[in-house]
Amino acid sequence: MKYISEFRQQDLARQLARAIAQTADPDRHYRLMEFCGGHTHAIFRYGVQDLMPANVEFIHGPGCPVCVLPTGRIENAIQLAERHDVILCTYADLMRVPAIGRNSLLKAKAGGCDIRMVYSTQDVLKIARENPGRPVVFFAIGFETTTPPTAVAIQQAQAKRLTNFSVFCNHVLTPAAMQAILDAPQPVSIDAFLGPSHVSTVIGSQAYEPFAERYAKPVVIAGFEPLDVMQSALMLIRQLNEGRHEVENEYSRAVTRQGNLKAQALMREIFELRPQFEWRGLGLIADSALKLKADYADFDAEQRFNLPAIQAADVKGCECPAILRGAKKPQDCKLLGTVCTPENPMGSCMVSSEGACAAYWSYGRLSRKSG
Image (tube, rainbow, N blue to C red; front, side, top):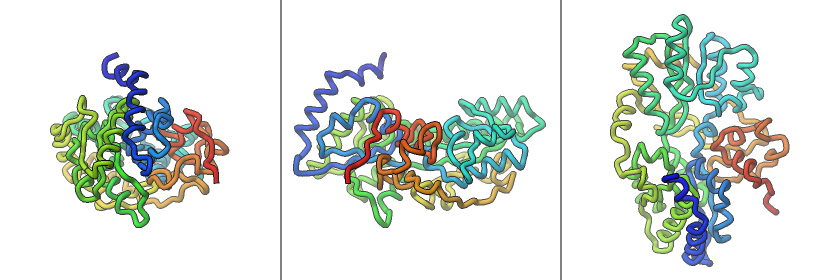
């Protein structure tokens, strides 16, 4: 299969493992943050961590869009369905993330709310067309990857005068989160970043150049396959050994320096920056999320339904916030594999298909750290 099987070849993996072992300085510890949850799952699904020398460590970052959404925003969505009789549409991963009182969208649906799982924004528009007498709200989440489809849906709704369609916008921005991690009062020790794959196809590799220059942190845009991750790790180790801090692009088959200019223009047409937005684990971050511009206010669910800001704590004992900023790993959480399982998640990282705890559970990495 082109572009997949080529990047899963065992012989090449063994060659890369030997090259990494020979290149890594035994007197140095390498802490590489994979920002994207897709990379986390690739690392554990294919045993990439086991192919690394002991002094090359992957640190899991906040690149799971479901995981970083705070409890209050999920509670907003539940209230939309409960109090305003809307048809609430969203992607499946969000359905089981705990809200206030261990409630969830799935439980609200079981309680009679009209909450529907969709695969695309086009599904939501179809539901809006088929239900002209009811408000239909798209619970939009995700990084720069899923933002352009939301923008297209808003444009199409405007063109077709779908006045019952609106968007509860929770789109967030990758560079702002990276900066928040590096500027944290007690920053996590990170030597370099594996840059996200899908996000980078939209924003391009140039978006990371300020981090390489200002913070002296090398960045390598990495594909999702195991050989992509291993090659990217080797590129980062070489940069660190040579004292370089540059942006390199291992995923050149999909990512350019400029990114997708058409998608970027579409995002600028529909959205603008929020002054600040709350992230699970990272707190309030300035200019880190998007909202609809005034020209599209008719499609803004927050304005249409006057949604309040809700502050809510995570489940007691859940370490998702610390895991999302790289301060802890899933096996540091006492709830992992005990009361927190995919069937009974305590936090978002166990729910999402990109969550770090879900990766540890799925691929048998539940052993706790000694000491």
